[in-house]
Length: 87
Image 1 (tube, rainbow, N blue to C red):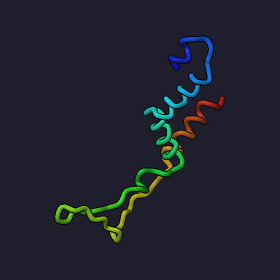
Image 2: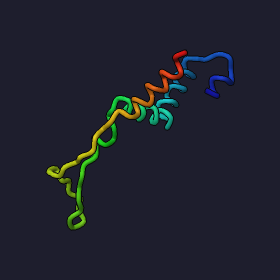
Image 3: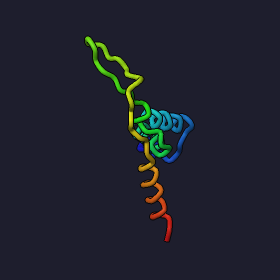
Image 4: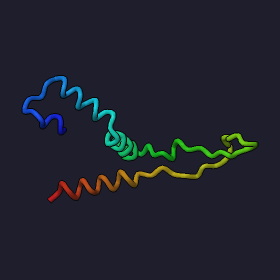
């Protein structure tokens, strides 16, 4: 944004540069992670249980993984939006 404020005119090159800078930023990564949690695609879905045998990690497919993905984040965001937008 600072680049855009240096001059009054935005050229096509500056716009492309700002978009590329945003796409590679840590802020965008956090936004994507937040969106993923909002859609209830939590990190818990990607975890698996494993053990180490003789220095090698072995996944245990038969072992129960009793963790539940929940919509707590979605509920909190929806409540906040409802609070901010209603009068």
